[in-house]
Amino acid sequence: MRKISANYIFTGDTTPIRNGIIVLDDDGVVLDILESMNNEQHSLEYYNGIIVPGFVNAHCHIELSYLKNHIPKECGMVEFIRSVMMSANDFTLEDKIHEVKYADNLMYARGISVVGDVSNKSISFAQKIKSKIKYHTFVEALGSKKEFADKIYSDTIYLVDLLKKSSLTGNIVPHSAYSLSKELLSIICNDFKPGDIFSVHNQESKVENDMFLSGKGEMMDFVKLINPEYLEWIHPEISSSAYLLDYIPNNVNSLLVHNTELTADDVYRITESFINTDNLFWVLCPKSNMYIHNKIADYKLFESGNICLGTDSLASNNDLSILSEMILLQEMNPEIKLVDLVKWATINGARALNVDNKYGTISKGKSPGINLITDVDLLLFTLTNKSQVKRLV
Image (cartoon, rainbow, N blue to C red; front, side):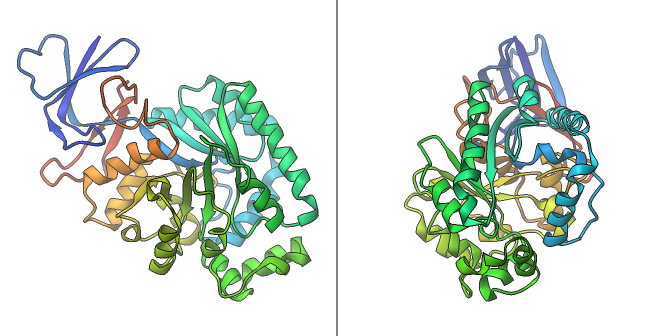
């Protein structure tokens, strides 16, 4: 049994508890949360800083970890995609597997307990089996040629079956509105089952907007090189998120990721289309968006909804740290309350990934992992550029 305390405990879903105490069993399960240190001094571990639940990384691509420092910053979406595609053969399978292991260990050390991870191949599966992190794998499908839709879907089903044989959770999702034929998008979205989770890269770049609103631009030119028939399903003057609304399933959790170019009208349209907005989650990946676009999503558009945080991959980030994402958000938006940042980094992501029965909050019966954040301004309740995370449990 352990008793852990700090200046404040942020449980993830309650008011911060000053000098509170968390009582845990030997397996890290929370037995109790006490609001006073009276008569609890024996064997008490006390830390300066704030204690928070283990973080939830709602969007990552761990299999792209081999591309760290390999793609230029602020290159834009098309050049980023092109660089990823062209670099794939520059590394051996052993290189890629080694970097997956490194990234997994890095995230655990950074206090991340749960990851929603996007995979196109199976190279990360062996590490996920051994990992201390809980993964939900989004097996990503993409392909704009309609005649290949059934074949692409069969290939992704094979990967989901591999996950299930390894007792890992996962399901098929589309990559984005611009990278799939109508046929493939329909097959995927019509096959969602209870417990599956929808996730999609959503209005991440201006060139994606240009493509859907006008049928022109850099992204349109790029995908037409891959498939000259691409124009047959594009709807000029309709945003990519508006296009997706005909496909997004309403009976499962839906993660809309990046949202860098969303407008208030887009958000209103999306929100109104959901029967139950509790199922709608907005995933922000600030450092990745700055890396590629030098721009982040406007959190104010989503603050009345469910915001989650992701790191994206080491191809577009110098670290896989949810705390770093929180610090950047607060630096760019000083008005964001720390209690909200913690919520976005923990319970919202746990709810999005259907694991809030065990993760996301420091609550009796849960084993979310326990993190200590140091160098916090405890007067203003803000993170600083010196804030660091240490995993305690």
